[in-house]
Image 1 (cartoon, rainbow, N blue to C red):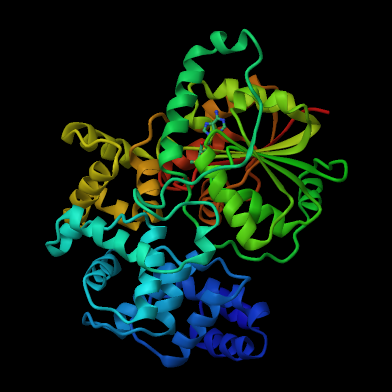
Image 2 (image 1 turned 135 degrees about the horizontal axis):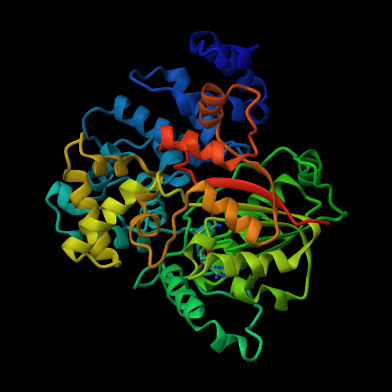
Length: 485
Ligand SMILES: C[S@@+](CC[C@H](N)C(=O)[O-])C[C@H]1O[C@@H](n2cnc3c(N)ncnc32)[C@H](O)[C@@H]1O
């Protein structure tokens, strides 16, 4: 009933019901409640709502990052003036989320300069670590270097056992993780020279992610069981059991760890170029008690050397960072079982038009892809009037950590796509499209243009939808495709 009320947008009815249910069974209720809270725009500070928000932030079944905006807004409404006041909401917000609110960033910078009680100082240190000291102190008249110094001091001063297992906290700071992931596939003799340009780019991409592993994340939701095999069967591509999954370009391990939590029957291999990213993933797997992910360091171009076939390959936000994405795709198709499924996500050219503008400004100003350049760029964006197109960067979660901001606007290589080109690339690799996994808003726009009978597997039609509503795929094109059996 509460869910029905929430779906109707009747928050006044849904909230008390969810609040009551949360008090009885917090783990079962928290995901639905958190979903509702993440959409609320808070303008007042009801005490019960605050208590419920804290419960949801700490619930294992909720990804706390989905509540980062709601928690920041509630804290700013609760404390309209800067004051040093520790409470459960501050602690849950600072230790479980990475801030993504511009006004809250100013408050955090202010807090870092105060004499704080131990609990609040420790929580702020965890926040500083998680966002990689991204805060630009100049917004409060503190020189950037002094701000970094302050944030590093905070981190160095406190005990953070859950963050410490595989990285040193001494300067130059805890950004570099040491890795004991398996070293994986190597290029076969001769192949290395053949694909020189591709490997050069892999080297540059690797260097970026060694310095700035991506994404920064704190905790995935402990999911209720979802059978990945049943999902693939429903897509018309049933797989042999047990299902072997490759996460190609796993970054810092959120995806494989999330998958492992979702379906305990999966045998997961997580591959990435970057040792630092893999170390982040291994550390988090250890913290979260996930044992069934095999982390391997290597290049997708050499994936065949793993000597294994997979029923599912997940490759999200990776191929567009290769010199020739079609070479990466061909290599992944080689390791798919006949009939196996590829889940792919690629950047949309239209949705990233404003990133092109950001890159133009960065080039013009000569800002380098290092902490000073990234902070200078952020200061520029924060100073823009809200009506400027680039000001919308302030709404992007990635804007709020050094690695995220670098991934978003300073990447060493990226390709952008229109859907007809994606269709061609899939066909060129011999894959059949199963579906474009479009978000609900995009599905709604499709129905408006082509009715319910329009063929949703026709990427040409989807391209026309995107032409009309260019922002729809800001979260990338997500596609499922199948290798013929
Ligand atoms: C934007 S991150 C995406 C991480 C992850 N898929 C996610 O969505 O959370 C891109 C990742 O792809 C990795 N990568 C890029 N090119 C690669 C290649 N040729 N082989 C293996 N990994 C690669 C990078 O090291 C980086 O960790």
